[in-house]
Amino acid sequence: MVNDWDNYAIEEAVLLKEKFEGAVTALTIGEEDDEDALRRALAMGADKAIRIDPGERDLDGVVISRILAEV
Image 1 (tube, rainbow, N blue to C red):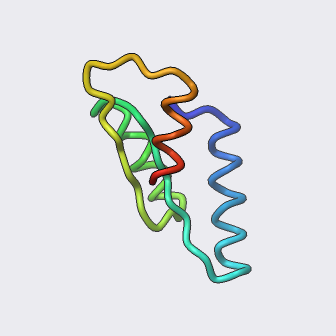
Image 2: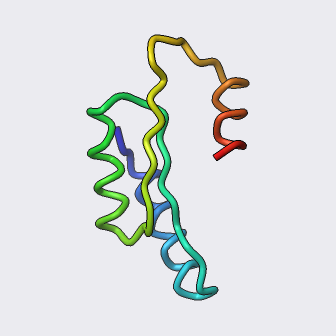
């Protein structure tokens, strides 16, 4: 689920990308139905979108931060 703060973050990331010639990657750890959020990020100007399937595991904050650090 994308909230207003997520939208603001994507908008700002795209502005920074344009200013500094970078790239924006949208990332989520979730199920297939979370891909709508990634499609929205791409439509807003993100260059790439990645969905990591958590499988059957319950992921705590430490595990999630380690996954994000690896990506």
